[in-house]
Image (cartoon, rainbow, N blue to C red):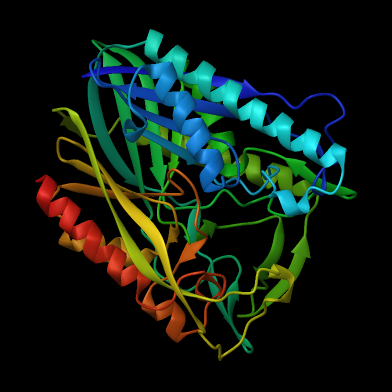
Length: 411
């Protein structure tokens, strides 16, 4: 397979901070890209940002396609979902010229980053072998914890997890050319904190792990987030922490949380590097992709996150239907389901159980975002992923069905 990779740092202009509660930056942010196939290339772009509105993802998709000389249907724009990066805010929140200038600066940073990373990846293309190896990661766990008032978000939850860390290694003869990591975990160690006077920009868990591996290996390392709607790092700098007596306490480590993020990031890098030494499976064949759109049941949701709180009851008020899509990328015995909404572990498990492929992964926040799409058990327990979702019960199960059809038709 022809394969190439590249990366580009996104640099904030002077005077950008403070913005959106961020007062500074502790780690650089990057755009990384992989280009698969020489004819009709498939492009995978990973951006160290929290999320992208659909229209912004489409703009970047167009830039990536033009840079690689391919169609937009052959481009996946993804984010690492670091919570420690500014957002592209909608028009109604743009109150001043300063706000609008910051948004344009973010747009330019990402556009330049995507263009440069894809062009570098295209120029670096060579005939490579693609090896898949897997191990179990210890940096993550379920984030769903049960409080007296109901289920909420914390560390070390009691729910199930798929801790599988998948590593793809591209090699030209004996020379390593690139690494792709996939893990079902949010990069949220530093979510909402950093310094005493405000938040700090960081690539967080995924960004730190990628940068550490790049320093060790000398090649671009790309992170793809999996079904992480209910999965998080085992330790966070701010939030509900286990108190050792079966309960939880609220904590905020501020600057000390940066060391926690760096420790977990290095641990993830160690795990990925170890995985590369294990026996694996070579992926042969072309990079094929297809997609299907469908209408999923929607519900009303409270957009003010500060008003959400744990509860044993909730009302799911119907709100028509919402269009969404399932995309599929296959390379040999690897199948990757790509979706906009953040999926939970049970949905991933059900898709894997029905898949005819040896390896089946889910990539979320692909070509835009749609908040959470929770499984039925999350609605039954009034969990955060269900409450903070624009989708009604049954949407995830419908997505499973569409994913299964794509997988069966692709085999």
